[in-house]
Length: 309
Image (cartoon, rainbow, N blue to C red; front, side, top):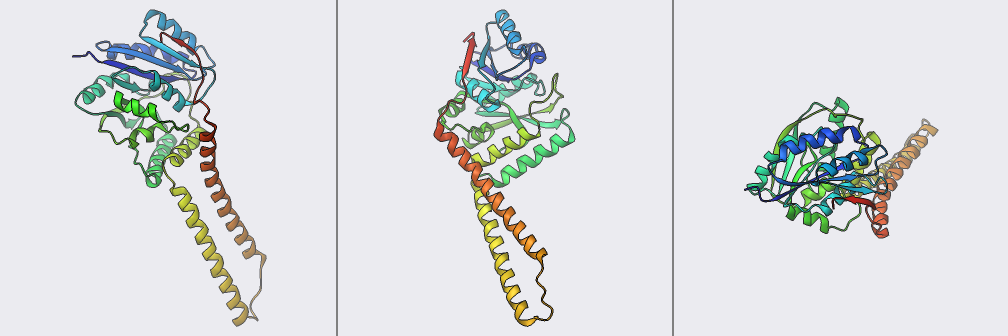
């Protein structure tokens, strides 16, 4: 019996051309269920909002939350989770790289007892070689250093039981890396595989700079190992410096005729130690930034308007 409520959360930023085909594919895939579509407009500068409002007049199950400005993808997802009323909640992006046609298969896994159903990418046809390579490096790197393993080849296309959503909504931290938080809860998981398509229209909103920032947020949110590595690097550099002192003293005593002091070794030593110090300060700065944001206790987002909510 399909008596449950299905919530679908879709963060959008400048996705006007994708709204209509996205709604068409979603509705045709889930029309057998009782559902709500929650679009979270993350400060779009095009006519995305107008297009969603137009569709919401035709279908009151389509809902809109619009931010004052761009607060980021994770904030938009968190907002959608806060307003979702469903027994299960599916989140996906608006670019149609993640096919909504597999949502019924995800629901079947959920009905069998899974609290989290990940959509796992078997093939990434829509991503270039650089994107595939950096994604693989990201997951391997973060899982090596993180205290919480994060499933590989999954993104924000997933189904969550309302119990998991309540857990996420109860967390008060400001810097939210949802892929890690979902895994951190330890709820029963299942997977549904799919082939990732090309973006339907528009360009990606995740350039290299945002990918690097996203990776740093994820790493510093779920591990203190970078601080440990900074300490180890400091110890190793100090050990090398101590060995250098011994070498210099012995050379001065036993090889006085051949001992010529040069600026090259001094320059290399200073650059090496300076690099280690700067990297260490940068790692500490990342954690201090997170502390600073948490202490400020500013809201994650500001809502400008709501439609059908």
